[in-house]
Length: 270
Image 1 (cartoon, rainbow, N blue to C red):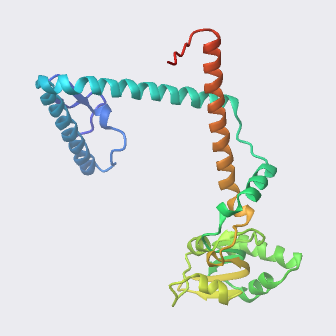
Image 2: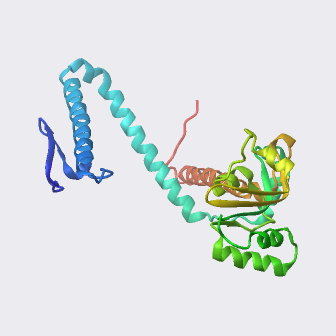
Image 3: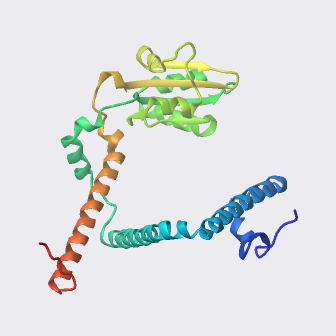
């Protein structure tokens, strides 16, 4: 099938027409796959039109179902309009800033809701090409606490490291470290066992060296509360959601109060 103009007719059922513009979005680039996708879409569309036409032929179906369908459509349109109106009002009236004080206060009051459910670590994590020189120096810099050695390490990583996670005061997921480095400990179905038994890991495969210095760790099995920095984004989302719900409640209450005051809304309770 040659490339179709957006006005090209793809399929027709009675007076209902499907044009190329209706099916263009998301089509594969490959011409053969594109044709298959268009054909599949056209057949599904035609089948739906035929089913609608068959349903319309039966007066009993129309009498029984059409009022309920029309009511559902009307309710859906009303709900959609309300959703967009409230969403617009909330965006105009609210902001997305949440202070550290708010996050901390929520965290302290709800610590049971933030139990650690995965291993987290602090440390230094590097992936460097296997043939890179200076590996012993890199190890020495990683184990050193001096500012000068840390600067040497950062400079080295800029030139040679494929992956360099150097924020050693930041808690991060152990599983995400392994995935980011594409390194998985051999001989263990429990990656956290490596954390418990090693403070420094030097591993290699055909292409890369993996250097991991573990300063601290916390495990889910310890049933500890997750550190604030690990759950801060989650708490922020919760606070913003609660703020949104409160604002929506206020908008509804104000709208109803004004309507009652102006007598545009009268509620009769027997």
